[in-house]
Length: 377
Image 1: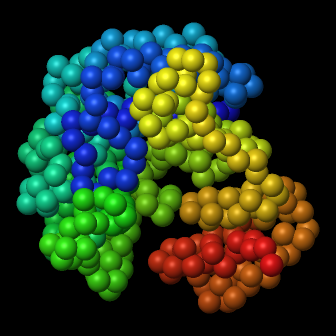
Image 2: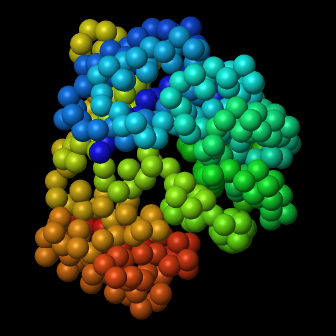
């Protein structure tokens, strides 16, 4: 089974840390949605009639869309694709968009999962990040969504923020656990080159936290959420039992997916392709039936490297049987040879057919995965 990702790039304003493709040109929304529906129709054969298990509207800020936009998108999806009755259908939303009237409107559509970008419950830090909501609005939005019947809510948190301490992070985690969402994603702040946050650091107006504090914050995250009953099922993701993100898990388990919209990526098992990260060029290309995208055919070694990076991120780990049958004896032996030191150091462990990171290994996961990658001589 496959998934569909729809990129909705519109934002009222950009957050200072964001490096995703987004735009504040909301006057183009109607035309963009028409192009997005047209792309869905033009590419209906990409997934070769596979049943659709997940649909994910991400951004940008999908909660900037109006009712008529959702009507157009769902009419197109259900007309051209075979979407399972139990499909997971997610929308990303900003707390300040989720007033009761808007939430009731969302409930008229097939959305059964909501991902809310909270980031922190600290008002001073939210102001620094130029988020549009405050902590009170985030809490009200969460409970309004609950009251409206959303039984599967994910919240996004960030740590390593300017001025953050262990105490402020503990307060964020305590508040998050009190809400008891089904899913929590927690990402360390990255200073992406070219973003306003990057420039602030270069001007010494904000300071990046040190590595020791980063480790302590991650440790606190893991232990607090595990003690609250959450499974640490992927490096940055935690869920109550059986509430993992089915859509995001498809990326980590090698399932095929179609990405539509400006900058969206697609994968069919043998190639990757991605649409241009330009609103006007994307729309014009679709309107003229000449989509603007790039494509990469995946050779055996690229697929092996992808397999290492994606599977080891998860609590399920990497199947050794799949490694051998999918990539051959040579790459199997290569991987096992390079994994042996990490097994001896207890940063990797073998459980039955699966190779997994230990808790100790999670802290150096990038280094471990890098060691196992195929590098051309």
